[in-house]
Image 1 (spheres, one colour):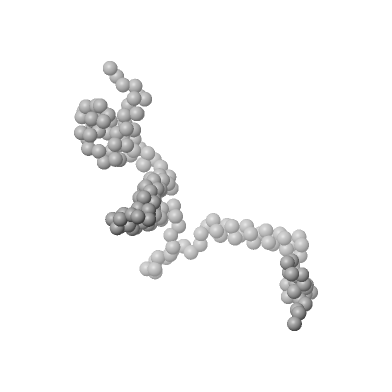
Image 2: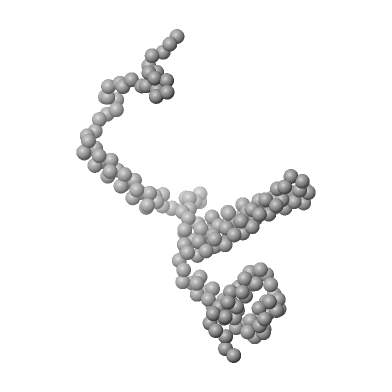
Length: 183
């Protein structure tokens, strides 16, 4: 009897999860209830689907997917840190907490580095003397827009040098006139 497309997709999803959990092929066939031959075909479909997704997405989409996966790992490490943070925890729990904090920091660094490698996160100029653009186009555009707005306001309302303005007495809204000092 032929399986429905929905049943095939469900099995592929289940296999994907089990592979991600580190299960062996024999553990997977026992869990899903399929033969080794069927597992082989379903794994081929799974790998083909994954390759299709990765090859057809932009670097930014690829990085976002990677980032979301790392966020789950970071969340899991947060749970380890919380579990190991109880007041009467043994030294091994403290060691696990320190290890989890270091692993969390490493994951965050890897996400950032991967974003820079894919061009999603801007990089800083390298120290090796290579030519590197010092301007960020979006920031340059924003500054130019603000300069235009300032020029429009100057044309509409005029320009006055602050040094030429008459002195205005400064009053403190809480204590009244601060120009009068009491001795």
